Amino acid sequence: MNGDMNHGISGRTASEIADSLRGLVERGMLRPGDPLPPVRTLAESLGVNRNTTVAAYRQLTQAGVVVTRGRGGTRVAHRSPVAQEGFAADTVLRDVGTGNPDPDLIPDPSKALQSMAGRPVLYGEPVIDPDLESWARSWMQDDLGSAGPMRLTITSGAADAVERLLAQSLTRDDAVALEDPCFLASIHTVRLGGYRPVPVPVDDEGMTVAGLRDALEQGIRAVVCTPRAQNPTGASLSAQRAAELRDVLADHPYVLVIEDDHFSLLSQRPFHSLIGPEHRRWALIRSVSKFLGPDMCLAVTASDPDTAERLAMRLTPGTTWVSHLLQRLTLALVTDPGVVAAIDRAGARYAARNAAFARRLTARGIAAEPGDGLNLWVALPVTARTVTDRLMRRGWLARSGDEFLVADAAPSDRLRLTVHDLDDDDAEQLADDIAAAVDALRERLAPGQVG
Ligand SMILES: Cc1ncc(COP(=O)(O)O)c(C=O)c1O
Image (tube, rainbow, N blue to C red; front, side):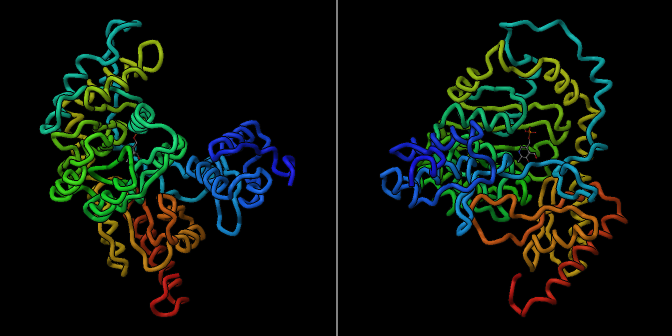
């Protein structure tokens, strides 16, 4: 095969071949859905070992540029290699997969907006508002008592913090441990950054010890962990699990530990940290998105001073610091006793609505356990996609667990439901529809078969 039949792919090493392919995709010469040559054919035409083309395709798969579908071969990925949180576009279906907070439970900022005006902030001033810093410091310190000295950074939300933290310490192809299943934006960030995601299974108490140990043996440089209200499973680290994970990490003090405590003030569970007293590279991120709304676009990150220093270089004045108007608004809200009480009530409300929905499903023969967080993670006796397909016919758009998987696993038998905002009638209807879909599918299966 000559160069043209290879779409102009060139290179002698895996990285060169991957770069050449990336360039073709960027210039639009290879378009989403286009097939790539089989690895053997490409290796022969470039005169390289087959392992080299396999490695090049693997790099591109990890970066989300291409997708490999077994016998279907490798193709250029469509623009969004992983699903996104939030409302689905263009659907008339009732969306119960959004992962959104309830707008009625987000505090009204009108009063705080009136009180927050201050003098203008100019280039060269500290990037963190001093009053927000002192409030955030005590908030973080309460939970990080045993970690070493800390510094604070403000970013445009948690996903932004994760991306910057990884970018300041990793290079392409570095391995990053992710919970499996995982929050979609973290999967996305790792893929787009060209890092290698290493899945760590999650059970009822959070990341598993064996999974983390295994990931460390594979040479991970960073681990992203959700200590509470893990998205999608709702799991929170128990005190014992956190201690066991800290023990495992004690031999790897320079692996960057990123804790994404996204549910913080709304959480119904205590916070247990993975960060031990001797750990050298760590960051605890707390976004305000879940309790003040995603549009605040603000998260506080506490980290070791070295990590903070490097983060700060990426947030220098004149480029991308977070507006002091947003910082002052956040402070005004979180220090208003009325807002604090409302946030407490919101946390209790999410928990109560999810627990009520779990009981509805359990009463219909689908045992469901509520975790912590905005969503309910439901185990089904059949594959989830077959149920989401049937639910569509009944007017519901639900998410199957497949979207959240990091490892290539068998089809998921989980649904992630965002149902805290359904009224009782709609909740009854959805529970009925899920049970009917499951029953219909079970009847079609031989005993013992999961279809
Ligand atoms: C685990 C987790 N982290 C972070 C976020 C979002 O945080 P932010 O809006 O601050 O980027 C979410 C939102 O769904 C989440 O589930």
